[in-house]
Length: 356
Image (cartoon, rainbow, N blue to C red):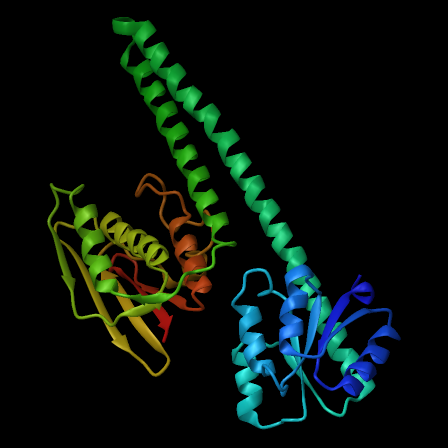
């Protein structure tokens, strides 16, 4: 419960610490004090509080510098920090937020405001911890379920092969076709389980952001995928593209899914055409992948990025119904967006909006 939270007050003015302590203890909080930046750093080596009330202006280490230090250490990076300040310049406040502070209280304190901000951020922090715990449990659950469900399908495929060998030459075409169908559906279901597990893992992945040469990834990925389509005529055009800010591994997953879809949904074209273009806006670097494939009806576009929602039957095109949902999830993890446009039998295009 937030009323039993432990709060560290960092301020080089003893009177301010005493007043803060009186306010917080009156609500049942346990209060610790540090009268310097060095004292605060030493305290955090042995104990992690639920919240830090941090004075911006101190003699040895400024509150802004301390905040940056706290947020750069794995042990302390998740502690919410509320600045205590008489400095109200927009630049200082903005800098505090950019370094990881979550709020500020103006000196001299107004008790009701002070406590309201403390309660709010303790509640948010508690909810975030509960959500993180729930996500970890879900990830472990999905991993266990994925492992346990895949095993029976492997056994089914093995038993079918044993049955095929046992029957030998006496099996007729109908029996052979039924066994092939069982193997196909078993393999398809196993793949869906794997894709669903991949999708669930996106909840807990924090992208490692860097500037990525997405043109290089696109050309490499198309080269790999096209080697599996040696009997097809695929025209591939990739113009000059801006670099994008993102996680190279996750961006490669995005590109592989989108290019694989473009290749798959153009399979009924005598000449498949896949075009990649890019441009820069004031807020985003945009990458567009366009094809002349089967397209889709825009009336159902809202289903594209939902898990297991497909706009084409399994008989027309194979697929698990997870790929685009996975792409959408990865773009959201990048704080970006994916937009789709298509016309039935006239192709589709997918635009990726990466923030600058």
